[in-house]
Image (tube, rainbow, N blue to C red; front, side, top):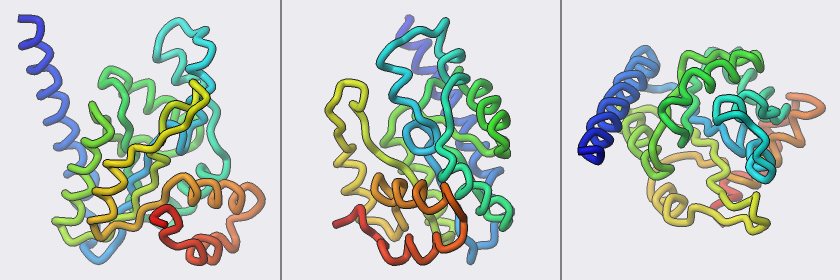
Length: 201
């Protein structure tokens, strides 16, 4: 009975976020680009908070996270250019409002948030955008295990991304964005284009 209830609740949340995503991209021109941006360890400096868990709960922990200034400026740059930016994160569904609060607290528009149960579920939203004829820039470190001292990549997810017509910015590109945007947003296009598809090599 408990398992059945869990399946029902997860299914309801999944439908909710799929509906939210369609709302997010419904006004995007099919010739335009959608930016799908991960949060944890991409925009938020998350993994140190897992080493020494001193928080009352997950909402408290998420609220305490610092933001990578380079990535923040990168996102603000896209938002100011009226690009469609959607934050997509593998977090608990009940962390939706704490995630919104954290984004707003860091000066980012927080109405476009999608939460998924598993990292691989992000592919659904990438494919949805592609099926609508939109170009997709997907920014995600796709790594885990930092808190244990051994960083690993979601290799299967990366392989699947390589099969899609998606511009994927992974760990190395995120590091470049942070270093370039820390001091100035000028020159980032040159930096990124020079290292285009760096994570695929």
